[in-house]
Length: 245
Image 1 (cartoon, rainbow, N blue to C red):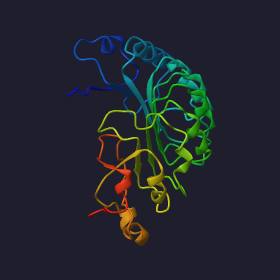
Image 2: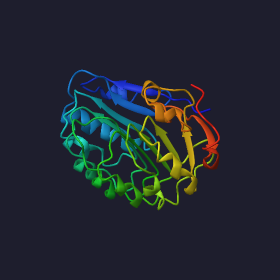
Image 3: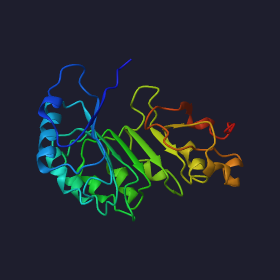
Image 4: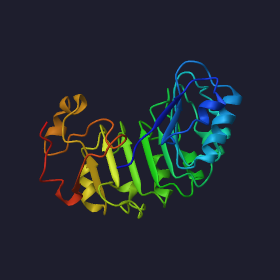
């Protein structure tokens, strides 16, 4: 089993901290509080360049919401972005086109277009939390192997049919992971998609408040798949099983 090592880095960054011995981090992030300087971003970007398998996470209100500082991380391969007050994802274009994994958390105060995702030509895993404006662009990401959708309202999932690489990851990594999204009708389309679906089998408050979600449909719960996968089931069985919550 892989050991997960997380570094919470206070600012200003200390070169000695980045050079310390021991297991290298699987994830690094700035500790909340002070705003990182250009020097801090430059140092962390250089560290990631030397550790290409390390994921980086940006979160909270202490980071500028214009995302202009992302250019310091043009070498990053795996990134989780959850910065408060973001108004545009255009700065994502400063990241490498062959980015492998991207998570866009619920960081926006208004609907933000996902069109900048076209920049990524080799993306393997994508997670979206609450972002669905221009979601059709996701279907253009032909290298996508895993897709996580959270707090999103979709009339159907047929839009993802062109993603033929979905499901190519070995079990138990599912092709599509959905969580707390309004997909009563979308679930009915899953039988027509050659994909697997992962979800949690207990009810969240949103599902409990929606009668339709208890009428032969699944109850979907928050944060499924971001930290650990739920159980896996063939999509063809989705009409015969119900949530037990």
